[in-house]
Image (tube, rainbow, N blue to C red; front, side, top):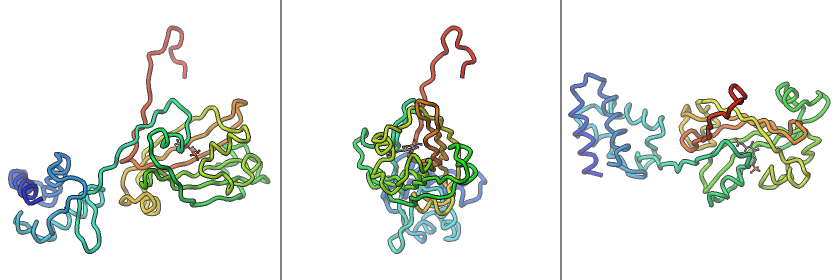
Length: 260
Ligand code: 16G
């Protein structure tokens, strides 16, 4: 690390003519060192004091740069033991052309899947749930909210809503919602998924073990039975540092121009 630290501060000296505030220059130097692999996941950063002495800047400036990098998920601070380069997430590449379940997706990659329950039960439906699931106000909605974990890394928070007539016992689904729906012949065959950018709030960030405010993906899936009936309305937050959603695009054939 000493050698790497020297290189970080060498870059800092080179860039010190750039006129940018010192803490931004230091932040960039550390970030570059991580991106170039000079310091790797799990490596300890020198103490605030050592950095300040080596780079000849104040400890307040060092602290500001380090705090920014902790907020951005580049560094992690462990109470009492110092500051480290954050572990690198093995990114999951997820195809957008197949309707699969989280359990199937992770099992296919040889990852061990588990979930922590955040909520499961029957409730009076919200206006959104009534509209999407086509529920009358006097019927109940089954809610299944889980933190989805693969190889001990929390990847997503999924909040599914289904009609209580489809899922009268939300606590009884076991480890896979789609497997439970399959046993009653109600597994969806088609889905529409909407993905948008989201900055994680404090509670979601804590569950996903990432710094608050970091980029995430908000995903809404509405899935259908072959009959066209909506069966599932799921709103999820996925870690932005863990997922790449990949869609295959084809040139449309003759006569298909403009078809959705
Ligand atoms: C996927 C789906 C989610 C579905 C779940 C079922 C996305 C964004 N979401 O994670 O809508 O409820 O699979 O998984 O792909 P399970 O059968 O393992 O419970």
